[in-house]
Image 1 (spheres, rainbow, N blue to C red):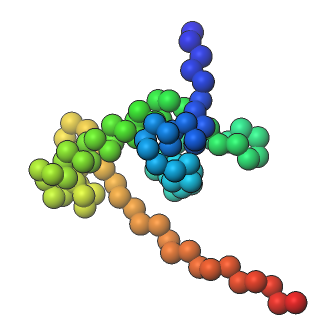
Image 2: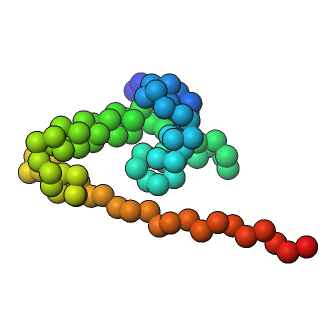
Image 3: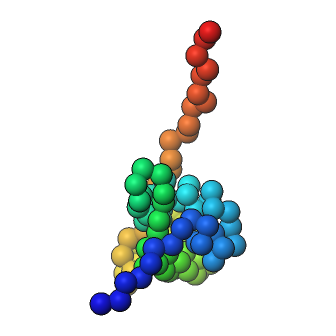
Length: 97
């Protein structure tokens, strides 16, 4: 059995050429599967990164040929693609002194 070390958001960000905060946001929104080590540290399994990349490739290639894929359409061979909108965040109010 080979143990594959989980990746940090910084490692995933370096691989994708984006910021670590973007990776954390993907995890928070549930778009990328991640887990916590303790109460603060986030980690991502390499297979979750590969799965996310495959989904992006499928969505990207389908979107150029079929407009329904960007609207949450499905493909017969790949299953269903579901897009969801996140709820708008309300600004936090500071407590009165």
